Image 1 (cartoon, rainbow, N blue to C red):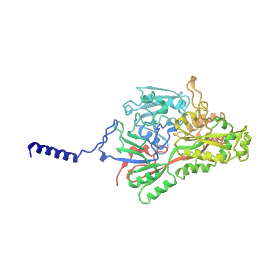
Image 2: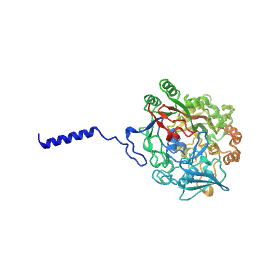
Image 3: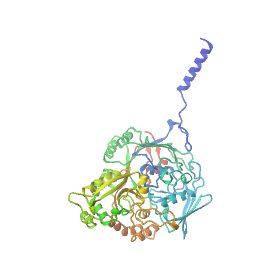
Image 4: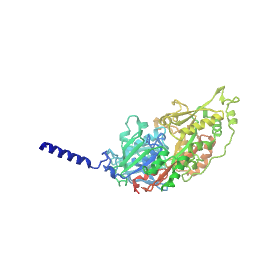
Length: 556
């Protein structure tokens, strides 16, 4: 054998030896993330019903378990919710926040100098201004009433001192400016507000950063952010994974998932109970800040008459609608028998009266007739109501179909319209004059972001007048306005009247006007395996993942 041949063989064996012991694979580097050897990753996998967008926590169209989770982990807030439900100053972002002037009512926020977005842009006053303007002007936003009291926002010290001036005193100001958005990237972005966070986060400012967001595969991977200026989370990685209830329970059984957060039905609840017989696990019911309701819209010409709205409401079997929507899951124990405060929140008191008024008599008095065996009509023409629900969002579509069936049995013709959520909340329910569809009944969420007085004013208050001929302010989703109770609503919002006292006056009027039929509060079932440490239900309405920076993984 020649010398060259021997050298070639030696080189080949050396290469084989090198390939047999490769260096530890690394998680590919992405800006804002640490590089961690794959086999040493300290991660927790959470099973969810879905991970699809949008992810804008300020729009009704985007309300979901995953939106709440991502907002708490990726977006900065002036205040967070404490364990007792009270607002707590978030020192990750804010040095101080206090009322600094009574006339005009002014709140001054001093932001941390080192607080910045993941692209290094500072979190500053422009982020406050952007959120204020959008919440004031855009339709379909969550609880905008507090933002609409703001008359001006000024700043100094490079935008790190923000002064927010209100037209009236607003004791609920701590509920504002949570989940700030990166104004420098969104204010001129294509698609505007409706496209903000539709399928991604252009910049983040939290303990985690987005590694991958794969909606088709149903997986979101978050990794510890090395650009977060405060103490890092204990976990290297948090994985949110979509699966059916059956597959999620199986993943818990095999240990592929360590946590699950699902809107369980009776079958899933039973499967979890069976798993608990062989596996040590903990379960907690987690109420969401979301009440499923039917809006009988006075904005619709067919529903302007209170007798028609009352007849339609009384023709419905509320118990059956609740059963259809909750599927005997945890939400079944959270019946919403009041118009404003959700069942799990302190201060909730059932106010729903007994049904009053026969549907046949009420419709007859309103000028409707029904031929024997036929459908109700007017002026010789049959009447068909349109029931709208956000497409693909449960339990809203299921309930809309149940409403249609019940009304049909009472001789009231109706059809179900499922529309993309952004269109439904952004156009169809905001402006009847320009909408392609006139919606008579809407199956939609009512969301409580912390200040129930703002919920009241946002859901049932009259449309404010624009200042100085500016952009018109959207009406509430139902189009309801009662000038008799409006002063009481305004007094509750400004703190002149305690909310509990205001509701004693307002709740009976809302039931009598038959504008809204609340059904139940949505709740998730949280399942925790022992190796997932420090996992709890979280602060009220904040969700379990609001505390994910303290989670730890300890394999058995």
